[in-house]
Length: 402
Image (tube, rainbow, N blue to C red; front, side, top):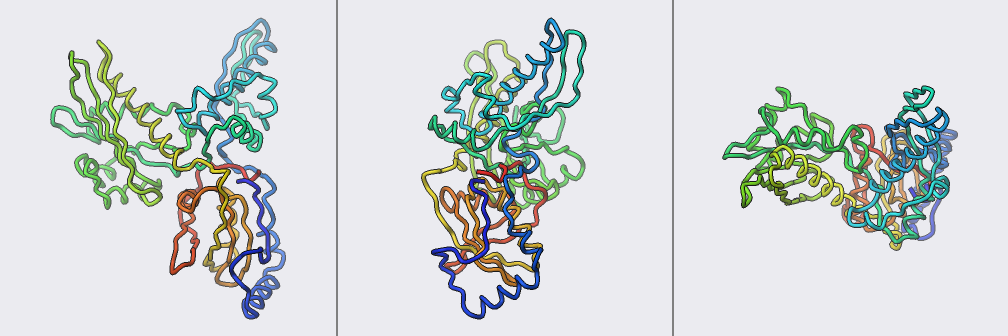
């Protein structure tokens, strides 16, 4: 979040004049809630939340050198470089990969906020550990902006991937064998949080099998897809339909059609194809296809959520609340939304909070980002209504600092 400021009072240009009655109600609420209200509107002060997008965890290092100290120093340096590469890949589009900076250790040092070490093991000449690096959001953003490289920070809620495989006229999803499902099982590696779109595979238990079949998934049965998503507690559902054919020369050819269904995005479709190399096994072609599709899903999400620094807007919203706790929850969730630059509390009464939200980009991008934090934004009779959703834990997000 850029700025991360929340203030109490009437902002200039709020467009919401306080009548005598509204002002009295607001003052009464302040008097009633007292100290709790002060806590609710206090700025977050840059405190990072867990699993923010500027944190790279699970970086495994294993280095042998002449001494344990030399091995450790080399491991930390190489781990930092790898973590920085993962971070840039997470934030930027694949089309910009050749423009990404390669920094020296001295230049990277100014970007690192802190480092934590787990499972550390040493011998006389060897060093092993798992490293977690947290990078400074403001400095990383400045670096990318100076290089004119577009980037996104809005993480998607976890999405459920249904790998449907069609070969020789047979369509499978839960049945074994399903080599397309096997290809997806390792597509994101051990750290599924590397990207902005966490992807999950359902276990394929009896409840999953009863919820939806292969043909129903391929046809995009929305009712069944929604029920399956609700059962797994994820956001959208991605149906990845792979069809096996033979390319000229007999090499395997995979055609993949991907559809993303859900409330946070309008229906999206990706069509791609991968042709096998001479002598390449079908399973290897499927693994390459799954990796490509995962990258394209990530890129499409980033393209929809690129931060538009040159465009800043303000929207006045009404947040219906039942208690002070609802306002505290909303404030916390707003603090996790990368495109939100500032939130001004205009009025707080027993049943609603009126806010001015300053944000980067357009209103559709704001609504999409808010949805990932379980906040629904909709227009009703010319007014914007912000509502709390009942989703689970929020996804990875940017820390509340500028």
